[in-house]
Length: 83
View 1 (cartoon, rainbow, N blue to C red):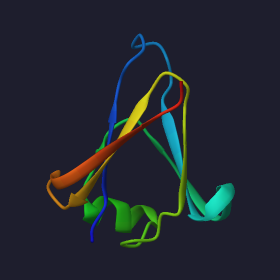
View 2 (view 1 turned 60 degrees about the horizontal axis):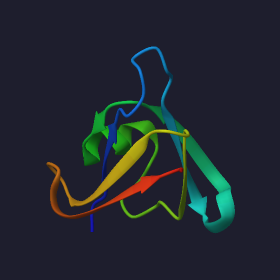
View 3 (view 1 turned 180 degrees about the horizontal axis):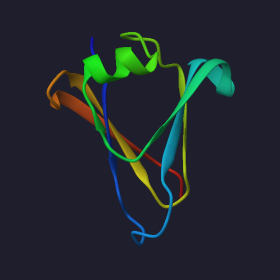
């Protein structure tokens, strides 16, 4: 299963959005932080996130990260948001 990330801006444009992905549960292990944007499977691999390597995620308050099952923002998806 491929996981693609799209961060959806929910705050004013002056706000800074980022999301941190961790290789283990409970926000531990190898991690990488990405800024607001849309990332394909290839983009993620280049950023150091191998396929199926995400175990936990931290999202900047007020923003949403959407994870897709398939490349090209297709297939099942789910949204994560810090409320």
